[in-house]
Length: 91
Image (cartoon, rainbow, N blue to C red; front, side, top):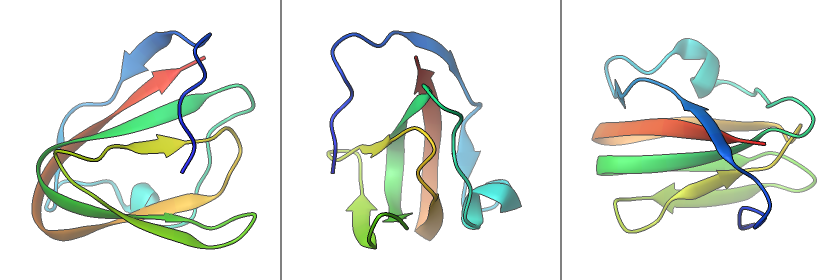
């Protein structure tokens, strides 16, 4: 998985989501805009993060392991039981 580039700055974050409140859009293939990176931060539990291109990569995220969303790359998430998380956006 990629790391955030050193030259990007945080500009917003989502509310906290749980396995019950995660928006349907995040559960299906979606992408960020050109130049927009994301950092999926787990506060509790586990979340499966699927990076769908250029080839499939599946990563289980936890409090100890965050996910990096690259600009325009299709991805989706799946709660693995009870989870609390948010996404912070950078550009």
